[in-house]
Length: 493
Ligand code: ADP
Image 1 (tube, helix red, strand yellow):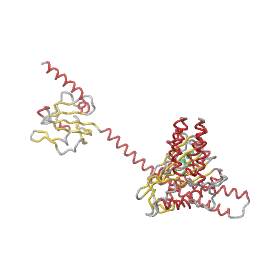
Image 2 (cartoon, helix red, strand yellow):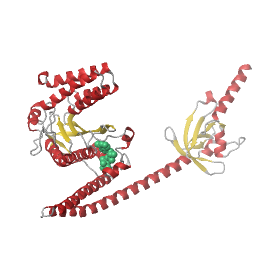
Image 3 (cartoon, rainbow, N blue to C red):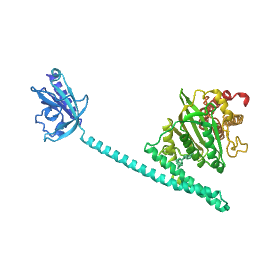
Image 4 (cartoon, rainbow, N blue to C red):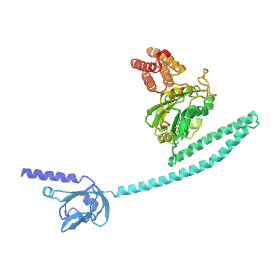
């Protein structure tokens, strides 16, 4: 007797648990009679506790009676499926339903059914879908409008630019010449903005494609440096370009888009740097059978970016603060275009920066190999010798003016690295962390990433120096020194 009461109490407890979920729960017998149900059934289907209900009256398209037994009307989909559940007043709700047939002898029931009212979710989903369609339509219209307007703007601006150029070829007074130069500069800034807006709207509407053609990497870098050199010289800063010797000259990729990305990063670096230098490092990071990855770094010693602003950088129309727009101009589209283009070329873009100390923008792109004889050491050696044959651009200018182009491992560069290392170790020993940091920074700028991972080692050393950990800094220093000695031979120092 005691056991029996315990069983009944337990059953009561289980029954009350059934009332907790919002889901409707039904247990039914062979003829469809619902022998057990939870409170949700009453509240949602508006039946009273004492009313008899049959499962086939609620789920009319799911069950039917066959010779007095309830059977499935069709074969419902496996798992949950969507169906109508009829209320007492003959209206219905949409329910996500689940049926399970039971062992009648063991459970006393023929089957169970769970049903969740999904009417309101369906409404919300419908609203969301139509909102999405509306937004997409609006985006499409906006992009088409922007593309048309910018296209229309380009023609007159190009016209003014052309006329200004013609005027400059005539005899003008100094004052007139200066004015025409300003007109020309304004036109080229406008063309830059128009092109950015046009590219942005093309990227947004998915009309941008990457074209794969064979091109000369060194000619591309050559052009990049030449085009940007006037601005570098105007600002009185230095441009250093390190290209790892194992990068073959000919490759297959989108030269125009790689140049566009580099131009964007380089022109930002020039814009935001007023003293010091800009270093472009290019290394080969992944070498597969048919393609390889190029890793570019554009390092500047400019105004830097606040850590909390970095997340916003690659979003469209984002400039880190409004005063920057007033001071430096721009639309905040450049980096968003860079991110899109780099991702379309199978790579990614990244930034490391410190306010007041400078920024490093890096990105990778995948390119295809141009031919079986293009890769390998012999070419690398050959290329090193004609790398950056820049004609009128001074190479390794002693006076530090304008461009200075090194190849990593050239005697000038490596001796500079070693000189900085000597000073660095003295500073570490004397625990003069501020000076040590600046020497570590110089080394970091001077070495290009290569197979010995010099750049990474230099970076780690600088980070340890910043922490002011004496012993750890010496360990890092020795590691870097060993790697440099291995890469360039001790005799060079
Ligand atoms: P914009 O075309 O206006 O320069 P970008 O998308 O290229 O737009 O850059 C967005 C913002 O990121 C810039 O306005 C600037 O605040 C910041 N930024 C980009 N590059 C640098 C850099 N090298 N140094 C400091 N700030 C930078």
